Amino acid sequence: MDVKYIFITGGVISSVGKGVTCAAIGRLLKERGIKVAIQKLDPYINVDPGTMSPYQHGEVYVLDDGAETDLDLGHYERFVDINLSSVCNITTGQVYAEVIGKERRGDYLGGTIQVIPHITNEIKRRIGLVSKDTGAEVVLVEVGGTVGDIESLPFIEALRQMRTDAGRDNTFYIHTTWLPHIGATNELKTKPTQHSVRELRALGISPQMIVARADYPIPADLCAKMAQFCDVEQRAVVPMHTTDVMYEVPLLLENLGVGDYLMEALNIKPRKQANWTDWEKLVKQARTKKPVVRVALVGKYVELHDAYMSVRESLYHAGLALGVQVEIDWLHSAELEKGRGWNEVQAADAILVPGGFGGRGIEGKIQAAQYARENKVPYLGLCLGMQLMVVEFARNVLGYTEANSTEFDPVSSYPVIDLMPDQRNIADMGATMRLGVYPCEMQQGSIAAEAYNNGVVQERHRHRYEFNNAYREAFEQHGMRLSGISPDDRLVEISELADHPFMLGTQFHPEFLSRPTRPHPLFVAFVKAAAERAGVNQQAIPLDIEVSH
Picture 1 (cartoon, rainbow, N blue to C red):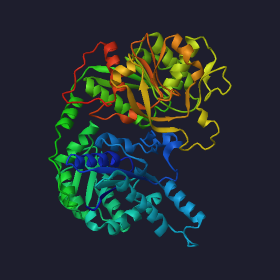
Picture 2 (cartoon, one colour):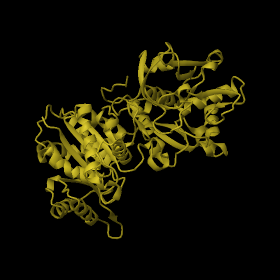
Picture 3 (cartoon, rainbow, N blue to C red):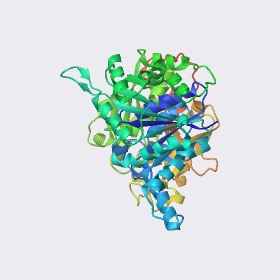
Picture 4 (cartoon, rainbow, N blue to C red):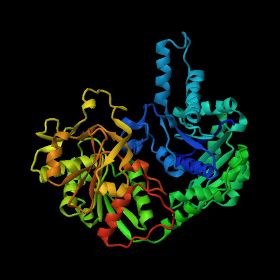
């Protein structure tokens, strides 16, 4: 069977919801028994987002094979419940680096290197790798940005050529656009969509479906208008107004007939009847009034919530599983250093300190860890959050007042967190950390072992510094349990306090493996501890829910 391709472009404005739309469509196909993979084409010239500021790009999402990718891949994995690989995120930087490398080696035999065919051929080659790597029958390909951006032109041209290369019967083009609302006249406008489609058609692609996004319900007459002016079947104009529950999007698309339409258009026979029972219960649970649990998220990039997208969703998944509403107080660690935000910390039922890089706001995170330890407040530290939990313990329990990570104090007298040995001589910053899935062995009887109910787990990493093994004995003698260790006994993966209701840190990033119907066990245990501290009743979700691992 030929591989089928669905290409998703965006128009009018960015951040219109292409990633969620793409992920939801993937779920529609999976529910019909089709093996799906999803790829993101990012037009920026960076090789990957690993060196980009979270303020510009949001979180860096790490895959099993260590690829640092766009946050949309998190949406893909969470919605479709699949594990993707590095071939599923292409950037302009990767494409040009490959082509220029070939030119330097003389692979083009002296030919002039051009955008067409050399760059577009490389893009198409990488699109083709997805089905070979994953065995997918249908590959969804999302193009970042909006039509008309100069950066995305080579990608759009490559997608146009795919119609010929893969065959017209094996390709389908979806254009996602935004309908602005004019407050003065209280109406939605389709003209920007018409212009966007015209721009796309001028580049050689005529969309076969339009997903029209708006913050207000879209009336049928506007759908008919878009169908007429954009030369699309009326049933292929999909009105998608903003929902308060993101995980409802697949259900909305299903009710609008999108799944059946795509199956017909691509001539694919479903292998099973779509069953949305669990998703319907999930959305119902999300909308059910539940007791509130407050989590103080003490971070460095809290102005942009997308910087912690997976952390936020993991808390949400755990809350749904336990029947509580997790409300996040977004607190900037640098503000805590100035004495601001402590009322929110003290009012919270739990404290979470996520990952990050650089020295700004570090002392505020350490103060948050100290407050959690001294006041028996449930605490979850992720990567840097674990490292600073260790620094705080060293300073205030072990008496190493100058303890620090060598990331922030290279000449610390007590470097309880230090650079990994194999990182010492690395000069390049991109893709050089400990990245991807590694095993972790649990200490029996620990909080972590009880949460996982498993002796060995696989977790995704993204770090350069680690617990300094020279201090293991001192920490363990004073009440810190090193409850997760790498099988070679080289790396401390999980640390926790034996005399605390729940104070646990992970060197890895569990947030990357949480799913809506399979919440991560550490987040479930953390939110459960927060609910117990808040004194609220937990109401199990009405699902046959499975905790990950």
